[in-house]
Amino acid sequence: MTNISVSNALLGSARAPGSQAAGPAAEAAPARMALNVSNLSAWYGSKLAVSGVSLDIRANNVTALIGPSGCGKTTLIRCFNRMHEFAPNARVEGSVLFDGVDIYAPGIDPVRVRQRIGMVFQKPNPFPTMSIAENVAAGLRFLGVRSRSAIADRVEAALRLAALWDEVKDDLKKPGIALSGGQQQRLCIARAIAVEPEIILMDEPCSALDPVATLKIEDLMRDLSQRYTIVIVTHNMQQAARVSDHTAFMLMGDDGAGHLIEYRPTQDLFTRPSDKRTEDYITGRFG
Amino acid sequence: MTARPAAFGAHGPEALYRRRKLVNHAMTAAMVVAVVIALLPLFFILFYLLKNGLSGLSLDLITEDPNHPGRSGGGVRNAIVGSSIMVGLAVAIGVPVAIGTGIFLSEYGQNRAGAMIRFVIEVMAGIPSITIGLFVYSVVVATQKHFSGFAGGLALAVILVPIVARITEEMLLLVPRSLREASYALGAPRWRTVIRIVLPTAMPGIITGVMLGLSRIAGEAAPLLFTSLGNQFYSTDINSAMDSLPTRIFTYATGPYDYWHDQAWAMSLILVGIILVISLAVRALFGSRVTVRQ
Image (cartoon, rainbow over all chains, first blue to last red; front, side, top):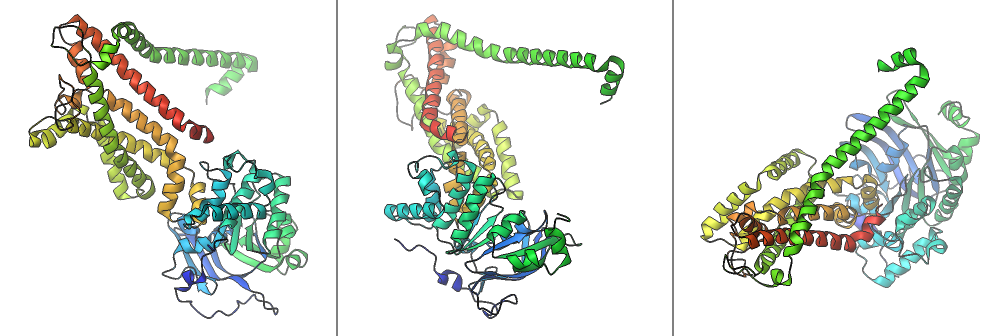
């Protein structure tokens, strides 16, 4: 199999600000951190959407971002692979360390960042002009992989990982948008993992799906977390409880911007929340 | 808004319902009448075209060149070939420029410069075609000191560009943001996203735009009158005067001979037929994509 994963040297060319020390949320057991987010604020024009968030995302974990609508969780996750800057007049302050390198440092190419930090969106968005196989191969082609056999291998591997292979192996030439909604979303996951990113960001990946398809994606997330680091935004607390290892609870503050209220192992957050506002939210008193 | 409470008060719900139904029927009827009036001229054109044109159609018409004026018989092969060459030239020159402009406007033109270019294109689309012919005459024909098929093709290209550029921009803007984001999230740079994702997704619409522009320029006589001029003889040399269907139709339809009038009708039918065949062929070629897009 051709090695196409983008080497660390690509990001390593920029200098790393600060040391590579573990963030403040690190526990006694030395867990490898996939992302160290510190004091991250995000704006849309003059409107502050996320204010001063610091948290560390553990590698090979599922980390959930929960909170009521408008609390900035989608904005936050889009800051993790520099998708936020596609919004008009978008601005970010603070730092997101990935392998010890700030992805917002000058000289860092956001294209390189996104090659290693993939994303799955709220609504399944397969490319309509492409077949199932072409959809999965799209990222590989962007990376310049030419070899047909290498691409075919990677397409099959990605579809197997996304638990879609058995359903589509005879229809690889059919258009991707001919699949059902749940299958389309798994196709999008296959498309994201085909380029072998280290982190997969999922922005409410099940909100457009029925319960059966949702459960399939949740199973998939658990499996994928053995190989990848997964960050998921969800407004569904049960989903966060089911799939995630750590959960971050966000809330809109008086300033109209999203703040991080509490970030702990999922079980702790749901059974012994330390903040009154977290308790109110998870017990259904608001939101 | 004030009519509703009054209707309720005065007539009660049953009367209101009957009135609503009546209005509904009246509006539907009015729209059907409008459609019929709109389609009537089209229907008559096709009817007259077939009625007058079919009798003039013959193999000689498309395989032979015109006889000396006044001697009946002969054909219009030179006009058909000339039109094809000049329209092909216009498409070859105009479509790449137009699609490039459309891409620039939709992907990089959401600013002052884009607004300015958009305005210029709108103005260009509104320029009468005879003015464009005059422009090409003064720039190309007058400097080269001879009429040419190239000048004719260029004039047609100038007409084609704003039509296709505007449709391209609109079609590209219709491509959902989610597809662009999916591409960016895979680590695709912007230009690759445009070429590999946005452009193919919008392609059926752009092709429709090109077809629309092609049908428009294929029937243009005014810009060719003093660029390609017309030619009594068969010529495929784009550096000399070239015949075209619209200019020959104009000459024959306003000329003194009955067989000219017949041939003018037949040429009109050929022109419409060629455009129809090209449209159907393009649709058949790219049809699968159109249906995939739903």
